[in-house]
Image (cartoon, rainbow, N blue to C red; front, side, top):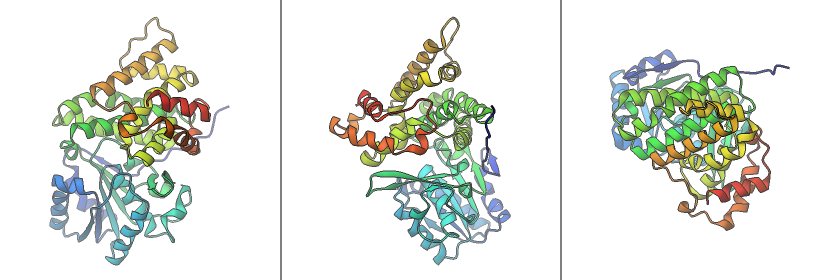
Length: 385
């Protein structure tokens, strides 16, 4: 029996070198008269925010700036930005940066129009009203946040990452300008690029995948896998940067509808407890989770190996899938991404608590191609200790 599926994504996506130059036109089309720029200190230091502000000034678009978004942002940060928006009578939001800045911009947009605190909206489809107009501009090829209805925030007290999921979190417009990613350091290119690749891999092997998400995930894997080494080794290669940015977006579209699986469920506890950057946490956890999941969807894992350039002629699906796993190890090695938890202070004594944290991420485990038990989670963490 065929299953019912639903596909949603951002309604307006503008791509291409120099796309940032259209920011004022985009905001005015949305009825914006005063904007808030939501970003982080690192991006300010690159000069990109100065470039954005000059465009807004030239286009007679008043603005204020919030530039203190942190990595894995605390949920308490949201109320701080919302108060600034209301106090300055801002009516549109520009989120620019990596996933953390885009996520804060998304949730601020809806918290301006919805009552209470963001804590009340952790969960699925709890946001009742659309937010104020929102334009998102990614500067990393990583999270795909510009095309997802998901925001991830950190609860430091509970040492957990929590999600707000709502169609109202899709931005009004996404601007994808590869020129903004040229200055990314190699380590950031590697970590964010691996995050995007894992989004596509998990969307493809999710039990909720469908023909549309498969199409997007396959194209995303092809673009990312075949360009990430070039983007890492030669950051000024604009063609590789553009393909990475497109791949990240397509992966975002895929996982926004099919869901990610257990790799992300394992990454959340170690990210919250040990502050391991999200892309690195995912990369560390990918090989052992992938090895565990292989038998749950052998044909699709074999497909992934083919996308990665493995020649499967004469091989069983199992053997080909294992070649795909080896390709993942080789890619992480080439990109110099850490592959062990111990380098971040994780010890054997931490594993039971971390594994319990994994089992709480039921939203993602429900998508996984193989049922996961607590003892499996502990064993998987031990493999990369």
